[in-house]
Image (tube, rainbow, N blue to C red; front, side, top):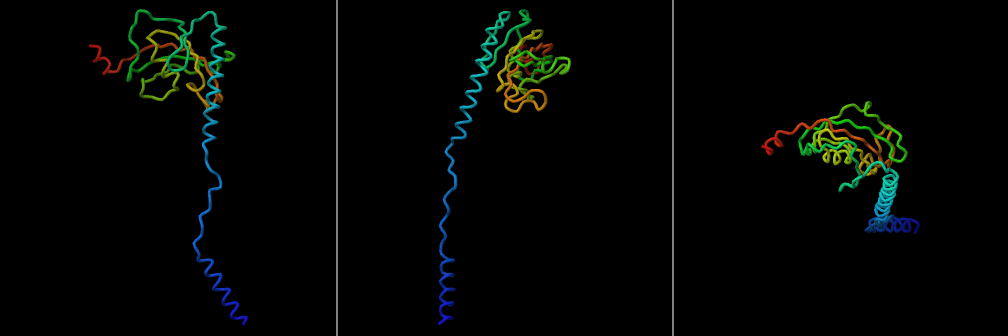
Amino acid sequence: MFKKLVFLGIIFISVISCAQQEARKAVNIRSGTFLKESVERNKALIAKEEANIQEYIKRDTLNTYIASNNGFWYSYTKKNTEETYLPKKGDTLTYEFNISKMTNGNVIYKKEELGTQQYVVEKQQIIPGLRFGLQLMKKGETVTFLFPSHIAYGYHGDNKRIGTNIPIQSTITLLDIKKDNKNLETEN
């Protein structure tokens, strides 16, 4: 009798263990709330930075700022009315610049520290604010830019002196424009 019970128990366990297992339901269901919350946080951050920039512009009665189509503001320190050429894709720009905290004016990088820079338009990586700003300048001009963090060094900063979500002020002097050969051909 005992042998029959053990034998039936083994058969019963075998049958149960071979049965089709039901898939487990997902433990957590993604609803997209994290992404939505992140978008809302970024919108609030941008709105706050833009309000701070507008307040800065209002206090700076010595300069007239122009709003760009790319989300930053700029003011001419030295304007070149004789030159008409604006940088185009492939041109090599030589420039000097500094970087300050917009909120308090403290210098983060002096132009002497950064040295003379070169940038090949739309063929090299630089922060979006500089990329867009340089393309608005003519040779010999000096312009002060107010860049919100999302077109400056963003959430990451520069891993050195510029921290997370820091709007910056940068004064740039465009020293030279070396026209790309393709741009020379279209002028002639």
